[in-house]
Image 1 (cartoon, rainbow, N blue to C red):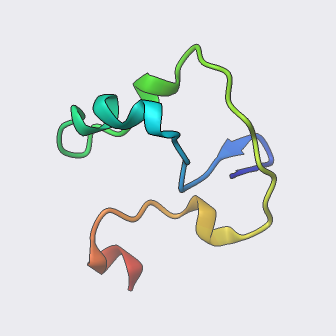
Image 2 (cartoon, rainbow, N blue to C red):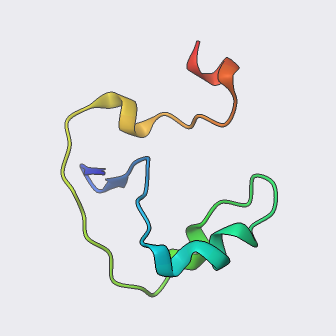
Amino acid sequence: PWRDGRRGHPVAFGRAWRDALLRLDGDEGARALLQGRAVTRILTDHDGAFRDVDTPEDLR
């Protein structure tokens, strides 16, 4: 998701990314995997795409 120059969540990955994503540790995130790669930006106006949710408590 994308709005006003900001990236949102969730980022979608194809099957080819599976092994690289599984190697990530903890709250490392996949930002490093995306750097220097072409991405498709999907415009949205939904505020939920810009919340960082790592735990069930983050949803409250």
